[in-house]
Amino acid sequence: MKKNKILVIHGPNLHLLGAREPDIYGKATLEDIDRELKVRAKKNDFTIEAIQSNSESEIIEKITNTAYDFLIINPAAYTHTSVAIRDALLGVDKPVIEVHLSNIYKREEFRKKSLISDVVLGVISGLGKQSYLLALDAARDFLNKKS
Ligand code: DQA
Image 1 (tube, rainbow, N blue to C red):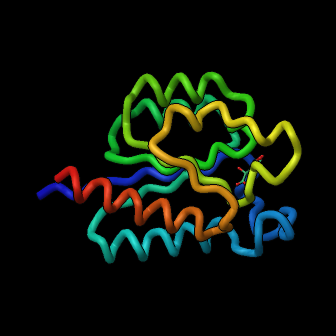
Image 2: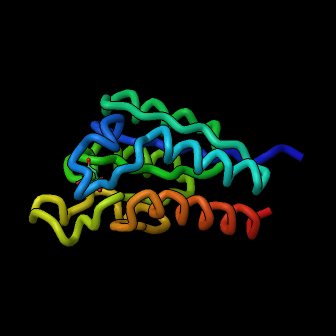
């Protein structure tokens, strides 16, 4: 049987994790997070592709190239600005979880508005790298229920 594939997209500036505002985003690097996601994915027998991009157009290309079964996305700053990413998500109609390391509702006013929250399956915000790991568990349960 074909393995389910989960695509993980990390948006702009997340390549700086570990060094970037560690009081807000934690000390884990993006490599640490991806490594843990891959270990968990392997245990659960699904494949994972994780990418980081600072480019809105590259993120849209990834979302609309529909070779995946589930999407976990942290659009980072594009969360608050990108109608184009929202439209891409609507265009492919895949199950999606929106993830944030920080609690966006506890921060500046402009971060409290996500342009994608109302078009995704769920949102996990504020639990650091655990936000991603919980999203992966939820994706696994969703896909197992489906098959
Ligand atoms: C973020 C929150 C965004 O507001 C911010 O622009 C980011 C990271 C988070 O994971 O907490 O770059 O998405």
